Length: 420
Ligand SMILES: [Zn+2]
Image (cartoon, rainbow, N blue to C red; front, top):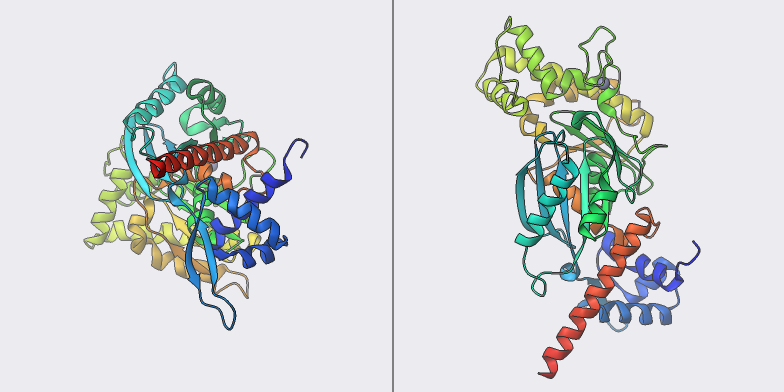
């Protein structure tokens, strides 16, 4: 930790605490972080001066004086989140407290000769469309979520077979072009970062995030941190072997979970039941949505496709729960739109296969929309002020510096306004 200022680490720990558990009094902060009351008073005064903390309501206390509680200022910073897919980009502009200020969609070809230049162009076009400086909170950085593995968030070299990308220097190119901090991460791990900041991670330290849709993904949060593995590739749940005689998977192996329950797998199962009925292969998610409507209308073959997929996913999920032992499982992704069709098969299979003592585990399906992936990517940046462990490395330090600088600018502006 050479060159890291202790006061900076403590300020980060205070932001992290308030970001994860919500408003607290100075006494509670001192107790939680094992600091002296005097240093908490000094550090919180600095953070308030920087516009990052504010005094909230008085918390009633028995006997003594009511305690003033401190909370984060949601407008202290914002981030752009970008979700990269095989045919388009989704971009969102999100405040520190999770409020979405704007969202955009742009066509994108990952196989284009200058795909990273195109990506930077799209980010720049959105930056110029976003509110002018002085009206919006300071832009802290860019978060990018990709369907693949990433060596390190702060480096951002991407391997993503579904995009045709091998060792793509996404982080390096974007940083050079945009002159801003850039964090790049696997898209499901980015969703887990959002859950840590705004969702289950506030109350749970060990949880799984599962996604269903075009593919199948997982993020493992262990002891409050996303488990990334040796090369950033942990969580490839979609490539869990299910059946050696199953269909060929996009990864080249046979019978992976994703080959059965990803959108292409569902469509293949539907074709098999209908003796070669045709679906639109250019839009698998749209074709699955049509299959869902048929099932909801009582089509028996379509109902069976989802019930069987639910059972396969349920067995695999039970296996993962047995291995990882999470407190809770969060289910996300485009596929959750049809969850009522998956659920009966899933519930029966998962309960049958869970290890004794885990059968009461809560599996929660959360709300989902087109910007959810990109909001996860933004959370990579917005989580770094609370990243006391330093997972975002040098880029995280730059994000924190921009947050403090932005606070100073707005503090100066406010004091000038007060004088005028
Ligand atoms: Zn596979």
